[in-house]
Length: 190
Image 1 (tube, rainbow, N blue to C red):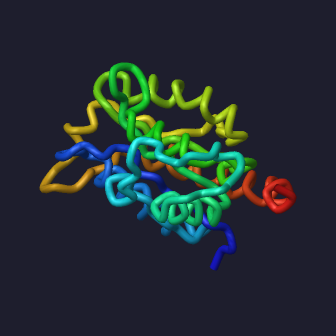
Image 2: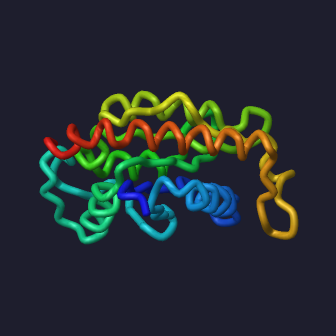
């Protein structure tokens, strides 16, 4: 069993969303990969209100239980995969809010994106993530999974991945497994 913890964040909270189906497929791929212990954080379940902490996240002086729980989940991760849709060419508000709640917990962690949407496959949201990731010292790897026309892949309530998706997921997991141990000393010093 791997000692690396992978946190899969479901970044959409909208009723009727497809994110949990996409995340379920990726979590199954990650478990089959065997390089990680996998945890899922669905932002719909995290129920983070619009940032309501009185102190800057860098201080880690959290007042609210929801922030403390979110902090623990992110702090425990050695690597992160964000499962995100694209809203109006960018990040969804709930996802950006979840990023903004914390600071040090994100630092020196390799991350990737499983983006989904229509013709653009959510790639504009993946690009929009780069600025926030830079500020939070999240090391975004180039490997990612981008799923175009995602609704056409759902049959009988389940996402039916393509061979391209499976190959991309394996590439993401392999790279995260390489990078996470190298960054671990930086996370420990943080």
